[in-house]
Amino acid sequence: MSSDAQNAQETIKFSDLGLSPKVLSAVTDAGYVEPTPIQAGAIPHALAGKDVLGIAQTGTGKTAAFVLPMITRLEKGRARARMPRTLILEPTRELAAQVEENFVKYGKNHRLNIALLIGGVSFDEQERKLERGADVLIATPGRMLDHFERGKLLLTGVEILVIDEADRMLDMGFIPDIERICKLIPFTRQTLFFSATMPPEITKLTQQFLQAPVRVEVARAATTGANITQRLVKSGSKAWDKRAVLRDLITAEDETLKNAIIFCNRKVDVSELFRSLTRHEFDAGALHGDMDQRARMAMLENFRNGKLKLLVASDVAARGLDIPDVSHIFNFDVPIHAEDYVHRIGRTGRAGRSGKAFTIVTRADKKYVDAIEKLTSQTIEWLDGDLSALPPPSEDDEAPRRGRGRSGKETAKTKRAPRGKTSEPASTEATDAPETAEKTAPKKTKSDHREAIKADNSNRRGKQQDGPQEPKRERRKRDDNLDDGTIGFGEDVPAFMKVSAKV
Ligand code: AMP
Image: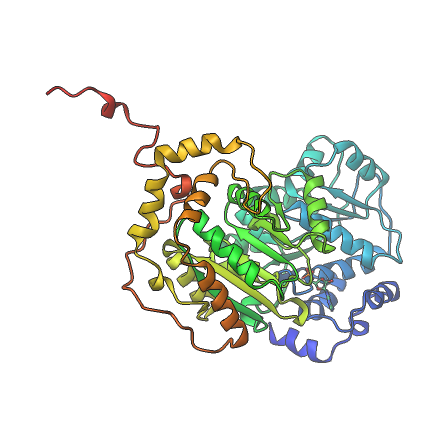
């Protein structure tokens, strides 16, 4: 946090920031007592019409840092048809919907016309809202440009432009769209720009489109998250090993586990893990980019109001979700970008609550863990011994692979045979063979993990019993396709190998 923001935070009240009485009353109704550092730092400048560069991530109160001054400024003037007065760009539909909720909450004493332009929702309804004249337009870049190209939107009346989660926009390839949109809006506008990190591409963007911005920076979650207990949990490298480890963790944490987000690196794994958890009778839902908007919102709502305990999600889908009291984070995959770790664990331990973050680590993930520890300048404790306590890779990797192969494929073919209702999960493609193999093989991790979690819970700072240490094995290359059970070339045998040999 900048010293400005820190000092301001110690003394400033909401009523000192210059917000209008109507906005202040809504803030009081929301139950907020003091502004957060990003609010104290950004709001007075935003109200003064200055450009703001806010370096902050979700969980810091940054949404209100732009919504509150915007509503105050919108009190003067009114919207004209197809000419929104303000524009907020968000990288995902969920974030856009969340910002809309903030406008509804803080704008309860105003009559604001809010239009939300996101994918997965019909154009017609959105066009009607634009036609009525929007005070606030909240959009994802692609959908906004679609409307613009259809001639349903004029950007020449935009007085305030907000670009939120800019670094995520970069990750998602939206920067060219952002550049284009910035050029379509009058130069005289005010720009409020937020990003959790400042990679060079984002710095360049701010230099290009912000005018003498006031920079307000707040500390990263990972450096402030002392209330988050973080643990690394070793696992064999196969997806079914990891699923078993995850199930054990969830079961062992049951008493304190109110709700959890389980992060996977890839959408395909989100679906697969979700199916596996459901088969194992866990109360789980999934959130990924391929789901339609209605399903995503319904899933999120169920999770928010406690109807759903576990949410399996990808980074993109979960980015910036405002779910104030998530008790646990499970990283089913170690994030490849260390910064995603910071964002993920930032979903728990919010608003001073305590939280727990478990990260399942295989041998191939070691380098990603190193990068996370370097970024966060901390060493994360292992729950029950580090990777050197795993069985040798030959047992870990080769045996199950051998057990699959051709016969594994046959097993997959029989997957649809009806199963009786037992406590055993019904299996489906891809997960069937491995989970069967896992059941017949001696389970090394299960009770070990439960015991370890118990020990860890009762004595967090106690020394871990790692068991006999084996020498560290060579790291295996990370390969997302390792879990498909294929041996050698699988069915894709190169033609040269099929040519009959001349003896
Ligand atoms: P955000 O960083 O905008 O996603 O906000 C994170 C959470 O903090 C949301 O649940 C907000 O409702 C909440 N919040 C925002 N401002 C304050 C405040 N001044 N005091 C307490 N909670 C706040």
